Length: 190
Image 1 (cartoon, helix red, strand yellow):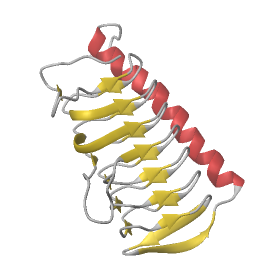
Image 2: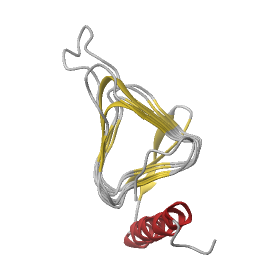
Image 3: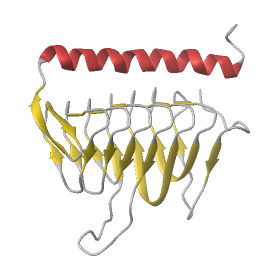
Image 4: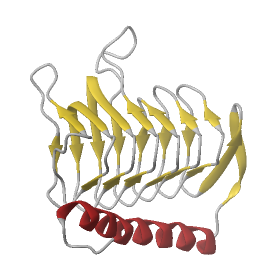
């Protein structure tokens, strides 16, 4: 599904070239730079920026990064000799206009619309950061917790129904990515 169209920037930086799986969908307007790896059936939506110039960024299988989001990382610094890579697992939903910076998001995690994470944050498996929330540096959302607010704090535990709803969203974005990819490879009638 991937292609380097004139309206999408995929460039090497610092000797690192983005590695994008054949089945990933990269929408027009995206900027993918440097040490970035994107897994199968992942989707990076319109006008996202993934800038792996200071450390690395990994986007797992079936994960989606929705329109206008920014994914970045940070290099080595005092107290963090390995820096702050951004490592995003499989089946993760990242909402529109989110900013994820130097954060680990485990499988099936969720970051809501316009939410922000900062260096050293961790969102454990099936953890959720609500729309508009700000997760301060070094904070950890444990498995199946919902955090919200600015700064974000624990709100409640997520039940099976909430987790199932998130996974429906993942399946939707995998299929929607295929439909959008077909618009650009000539296999769709629009």
